[in-house]
Length: 263
Length: 187
Image 1 (cartoon, chains in turn orange, blue):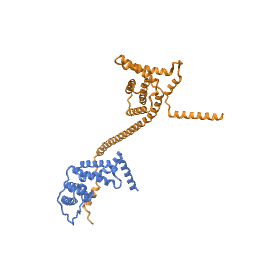
Image 2 (cartoon, rainbow over the protein chains, first blue to last red):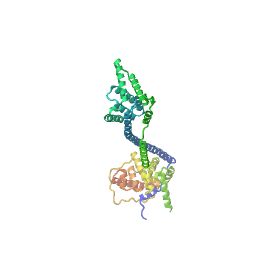
Image 3 (tube, rainbow over the protein chains, first blue to last red):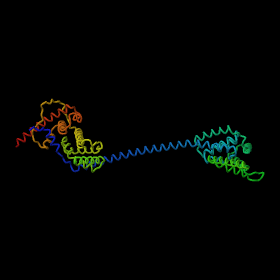
Image 4 (cartoon, helix red, strand yellow):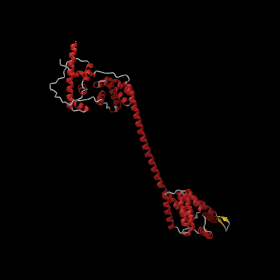
């Protein structure tokens, strides 16, 4: 019989051995595993929190840039439309100081227009400069103008100064000269003229201009056209309205032409 | 058929245990704990310390169970964890010492000892070996590690591993002979 290796015998005997662990050994292990689970959950929670906050920041940033991008584009479009419209208005009819102030309260784009009106209507005159200053001060105190609005204002001024002749306004100019004369007289009589006095004079002059336009002294009647014109100018025509009007007028002209042919 | 079914059941149980299912982990523990405590006991003389090391081993096994690929045997994987845990425990206790002295091992050396010996006696003989001899002997003769693997695990050279094994065998033979003399003397 071949001798069995001692080590193999040892191995066999030890391999078959089993030692029972103590009764609370599993509980100890389970407690450790539970603690580890809690730790892992905490870590997972933190990671989720960090990921969520990063996502939130990205979302807010993109939203912010999106909004600012839109904000940059819109004023360019609005500027061009309003400029054209108000230039027409400037040439055709007078603008009162009350309107100037109220317009400046309404929106900043109109403030640009108001200022251009004054530049175009009465240049090189001290009184109007004073008027302009008052209007500007009021407008600036009520509205914070952005830098681009100021820039566009400068451009508009330059354009109008180049293109529009001063002689267009007559009755208003006469009234302004009249007011200036009164102020000069006051300055000559008294050493200083207060702002309140100038304001009241200007307001009076504006009221008279308005009255002249609407109420005809010769016929003692109220001009319906002037009133209508006043109201019509308040309505801002959209591009669609303009197109519609153009189509309507062309349709009428075609209709008339066809009717005349038949006759 | 039964073997395949058992394997499948084991795989399902281990997958559940990997998902932190405490009941499944308890089942795995109940199956393997007695053998793993025995493995730890090869190296660690004190049974309480051996149990503590075994629990550490199970904790690591359960927390890293997802890395087990189900390609080899789970018991083998768990055994290796227990051996590593036992080694690191002994390292922490600073009990491992290896004699630097190199020994020339004779070619005709045989470890054949024809004797009957009880498991408790075997464990006692192993416990009496110095830590360095004991670890190399258990790893080589009982766990089946190769010398290069032992050298890698214990951070020693292959030569040191071989000489430690030779010395451990010599010492064991001597002890067994003494044991036989005493037992024959008493009978």
